[in-house]
Image 1 (cartoon, rainbow, N blue to C red):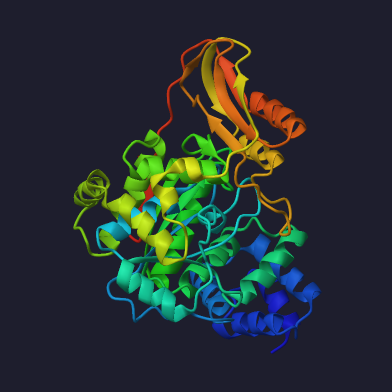
Image 2: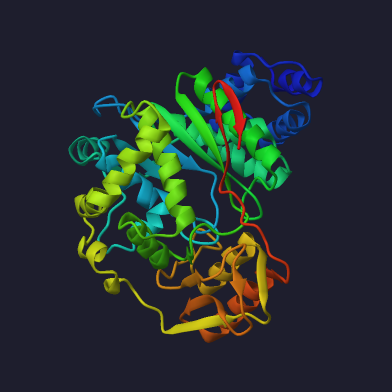
Length: 441
């Protein structure tokens, strides 16, 4: 088999076989096939696309390029959740405990953030002592005992995907549905879940800016999961503005705790109930999303979900007192409001710009080596559809450097669009995608 023949075959729009896909994935991962040939193939795929069979074969080839985590010793149906990312997206910290508290095992492998704010692991490390590193035996024991564990992804999880993504990133071939879907699903499948709920964001703060693309990506990912025997479904959700009010690590953790207490932001609570209800159905805990929602609400009301977060933190070496007393979290030296320049209704909030405003303060990483400042961030006070008076606070900045605060304030003011006429609030949930098809709301 020759790489040259595989490149020309795909360039001409023909279907690649399982053997051809395995050949180039294995050869590239081992360093036997050079970058320039795989770059040419990625460009051919970018223009000629891949069908469902090819996409599934590529995904499984990436899965089998490294370690596949065996979670068969965990009792029950293991349900994982993946979000395509957004601003203020702290759902795992709420959703994990909510679902685990009602008896569905949550065995989650998460990553660190490279961007606006830290990832789930960085946020959990706001609890002093919290460890994301543990042997697989302890991970499995924790899930069996506590119904939840959240750990860092192993370095050897889908290594072919890491190599291919790095190459796509510098060759202009990232933006292809099959390659995006295969990249995400390879890590999810290698992580060992039986069922997967996908949260696909759409809007200004999302990777998929328009709804049609988000539904297309969801369909591709659900098809891959179904094809390889994983019960998979997707929820399309709005990211035209940050989720909740908090953007920044300790601030988001505090907001997650407030949500588990039953008085978090409406949109964040609704998203967690929606995703959680689908996780309960896939996990065999409920027959319908309506029944599942009531079970989750009861878990919130009774305090079981909040207690489960404390259990998770303490089981992984963290200080559980922080769950009960948010005053213990690190505080910045500067807390300043951002004041509206005019009266009117909030028409739009550029979520990406709010994310960058938080990044400027030190809430995220610009490079892998960047240190995150857990105490800094932004609390929004006004969302789309809200009325604001001139001089009223639209947000509050938490900072440790005044020059950075000034830069952040400029970005926040530019991110907000204020108009005179009344603005309707946007629906959070746009639709769902299952193996049976697409349902738009």
